[in-house]
Image: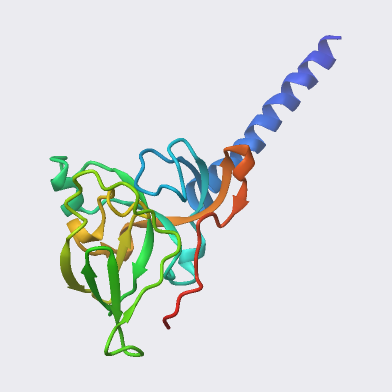
Length: 203
């Protein structure tokens, strides 16, 4: 009996060590769980949604317009919240503008200028939530920004209630953690690549 007990302990330790050896690298380099906090992505994501974020794909391909990403808030965004520069805060937003493009914001209208569309083209965005009109300074916002080689323009789907590139500027490529890969909760909304939209009328 004593020998069996030792064997059980050894097997248990082996299983625990093996599990950690598998899980920790996945958590560190491949995928991470995140819980949505706040209303900036309503109605695509709601407060409390549980997501698995793919952290590896962007090592082999570039982020695309319409993908929902998790990223570290840049220093300009931290400054707006009076947070120290070394503070790590994560946001979830949608990629709207790509490197080298000029983005023109006119209230709720977004116009994209790039090599294929030098005269600009209005972005069609069926996912946008415009219901929250409560004294938002973003309703009549006018802004233009030209993105650098490794910069992205990101916005929340709840356009009148989102701190995003309209306010704090471009998102550096290096700040991107990964893209929303799986929604695990709520259970009635489990899906892969949740919120992703790629059917734009723009190249």
